[in-house]
Amino acid sequence: MGRQVPFQTLDEVAQGLCREIENRGSMVESRTATTVRVGCETLRRLELDLRSGDGETLPPVHLYEAYWAPLTEGAVGLWHVVRFLLSGGWNGLRSDARLNRFMFERPRQFRINRRSLFNLAVVILGVIALLVIGMAIAVVAVARFTLEDSGGIDPLVVSHLTILFERLLGFIAGNLAVAIALIAVSRFLMPREKGTWRYCLAWIVNVLTVIPSALMLAALLFSAYVAIPVIFIFHQPILFAGRVCEWCTGLNWGAVVAAGAQYVRRLVERLLLCPLPEQSAWRFLIGLGILLVLAAVYSLIKPGHPRTRGGRITGLVLTLLALAGILALCGHGDALAFVTWLLLSAAVLFVRWFLIQFIGDVAIYVSPHVVDRFFDLRVRIREVVWRAARAVYACRDDDGNFLCGGVVVAGHSLGSVVVYDVLNRLINEDDLSDGATTECCDDTPVEDLYVSDRTKLLLTFGSPLDKTAFVFARHDPHGGTDRDALAASVQPLIVRERTFPWINLWTPFDILGGCLEFYDTPDRPEEPLPNKNRVINLVDPHAITPIAAHSEFWKNTLMYEVMCDALGVRGR
Image (cartoon, rainbow, N blue to C red):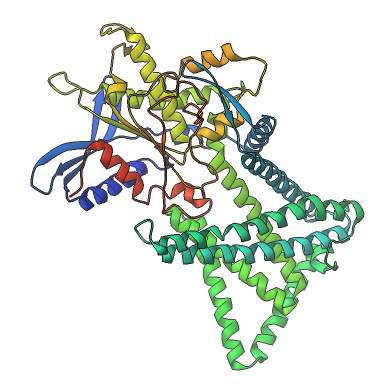
């Protein structure tokens, strides 16, 4: 679970499992895609037929996915995501570094690390800073770059903002280049095995990316909270000299076009008159830029593979950055201002896409404490996943025996939150069935599927379960025990001892997922009656790219090693 494209999850998991199975000395004899019907539910699955290195036939592996991406596509806007982040952050900050949960038949209190609260405050400040910068860009674009002469903003303010954003983009681009270089070096050094000196060195190099990241964040905060307010209020620049460029202040678009044509003509004349080596270099740069621009435009016009399209857009942005650097070195202020605002528009669109793509679905699903327009959508998401999961558990062979003797339930990111809810519901239904086999409820037979006994593993990775449990908890020290007890009663995974292992893969470089500590009793010596079958948190040693580590679990081997262990596929 967890991908946007249908069957992409099945394909990636199947490939990863096949590689791990072959590394363990077994072999995959065949991979078969089929469609099956269980009751009224139609499922697609991949069947892997296995054989050990000794020629012994192993139990087959069937892969299923629950796909709900179309339900959330386009359902959430930027404002909903921002409100989700700000409201959750504020709720977490007023927690007084404590979290109260009703678990394993009694109230429990967790102590929150002060560093976590500091990180939460930084996130809130960063979100507000992005809003301030985005609003400044929008205000200037609407007030000054329209076809009519509104005169609603001082041209000097536009000039100062242009200089500020030129410095900001240059500073961010420089630090981003340093961070990418550090990541590339760490990946080059990263060995397959943990614990070696190369692994430690690669980890240290990768941790150094915190420095340019902190510098970029500081630049954003300074721009949003200091420079932009001073420019708008006092019309004065901060730490740099302002300038008045024709492009920033001109409102006669005919004159702007004419000036642009004159500039291009002078540039061509200068190119033709310069020495041959310099002329060749300029022609190479201009030709490369034109090719990248045409490729990006072509990828936008003609639909293609998402990765190819994203790579071309990245190429276009890099071209604009390189062009901005050349213009800055050559002293062409007007052209540099134009390229700067193009890059600012691209940055605003990228931030909007990133927030909606990676946080939007979470914002839709994990706000059950608020009755909003997403309530029905949350129910539909749970229903889709529950029907698929129940069909897997209820599937029987020709003799009436359960087809799946052991089930591994896996969820990535928001998928981990959904499968947690669905698995709780299935176990509750088993508890309430009382062995019934003939009754029906909502066109579904009421029967005991022995979910707890047949589940071999609950695997979560990139999971925000801990973060959502904290930021949306009811931080009320004076009551709420009965309400918390009622909420916990529908979560048997935290009501009684689990009969199956729960493994959570995480990495400190993932800002969305994390370690899970709030689904077991507090790990303190004075804690009475701690639960025994606790969540096992494993760090993926190869998920090391900051932010992008959230999606690197699929490419690494740890997830498939854990799956093969649960499926009983042993090594040599």
